[in-house]
Image (cartoon, rainbow, N blue to C red; front, top):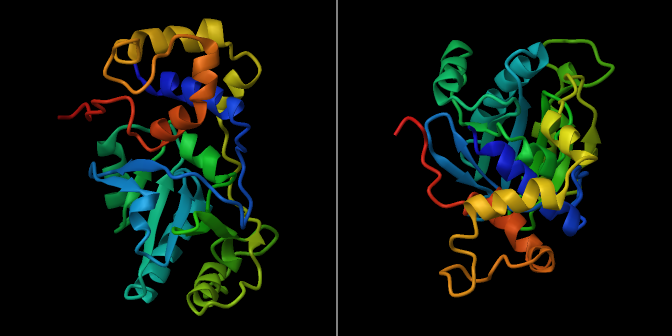
Length: 264
């Protein structure tokens, strides 16, 4: 059985306990997060603090708009290759097989990292709502400075056109020059991203029935009095008090330990 539903449940209860917002707007602060790409390489936002910007694109291979946006992102990445900007694609579907993602990259000639967010926890955290939606993150401040269509060609209400104005390129140019970004939010015409796991748990999630059994099975071996973990998961009050840390270590993949790919 996949461990991702369990992780999503625990993270959901931790988010509720800390009143964390699911959808981030431009200029909102976001949490650190980690994902693995199609080659099994680890990506963590905070490890890009030496970069001036991180650009991410919401991708679903079934979306024509997302496929076009990925091609445009590759062109922008080439233009900003020497300016300390990290570019990556975030696959926002539930696909967890690296071989499938590698095939997509090969078939679509995508020559950049595709980060696998099959639990959709990161997409929720950084506020991705549509495919073909791009965000620009200040990796030091951990704030979203631009959110929306990558260009006029995939902007909501716009016709598809060649050589369309690139909103992401314009925003990056302004950001790197320490200037104000003229437009920080522009809606993408990509398809709405659905979050079935979060929707299923939103109203019915129970600490006693859903969360406590997972903690008992996966965490309490170490998180007990006299155990090697820094605190004991001995009560609901204790879990609630530690919920910000629980959420952080889950979304950055520091916990649970031993997250080894099934192909190894």
